[in-house]
Image: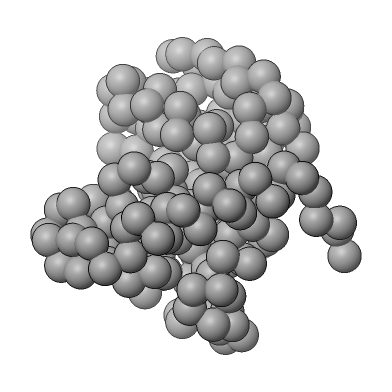
Length: 187
């Protein structure tokens, strides 16, 4: 088991603050009351300051609500700070997933995609998970649907974070060989 670092504690403290500030507040999209787990789902998607309920997250990402929840729970389970915050706010993480689908970690990546020329490149350096996905989201939003982004991400968690984030947001990871990632912007 990995050791709990000072950086993990800082992230955890930030997440707990977000939980205190946003739980029971209205969803910024539909105005329904936010549950603690929905604040964590929003955090995992990089929406730290604009959390939404699961229904609005799924609608905005054009994803099945049950599948998105399952993917987010998988992501939370792998991130110590999010996992601890989930357990604090909502109890133990479910042991069973809510649907039958293959997570991106179990799908083979196509190395033949490496010959494609990227429409845009971004060197994220050693940005960590939260900052990385927040800025990645902005980069992709500025691109046209179907365009290819070449991402360089040195963060040691990127090999798990980037595929999970792509799966959650509907963007397609067409190549992964740490620290290089090719991401096709969703249509």
